[in-house]
Length: 196
Image (cartoon, rainbow, N blue to C red; front, side, top):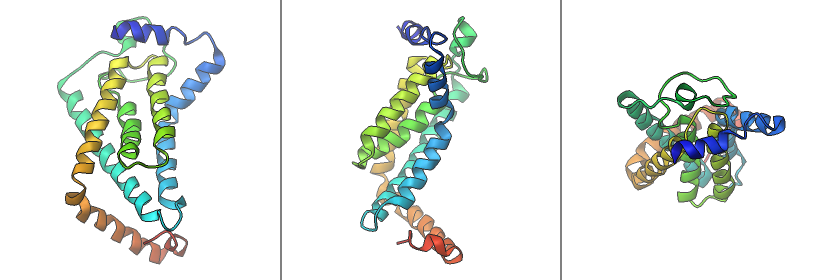
């Protein structure tokens, strides 16, 4: 079923150049979109919601670190060959021959989406749709199976729950980050209006 669903999605690749370019863009732009979105959360909220949005941004960072750290452990102890290693596929982007399970891209995007969902942020649904599209794009371009993407989503959901449940214990670290930022604003006046 895993390979069957992969084949069904990946077989579309190469037929429609515009769709190919769109999927390549979605899959390649992930780190940049995450960074831009984090900056958006930190700097664009109105004064009343600024602290809440900045907490959300910090929790997203914690969730990403936990999720990607757990995934690194999975990769150390479990190897699953990527689709282009085992089968003849439509591979649209280059990739290392490392383990396919779990998808780092999926962990990253679903860490953002799941944190927003648990924080009941206004951006939760658009970001969730984007995360799903990224997951589909990883299959489409031939570098991941559906199980890799689903595994990434579940891993991130679990990581986000752990982070939110641990929010009180993490508060000293959050305050350290805010203190560092507030010291930085004294050196860069432009940032001062985005402080607490």
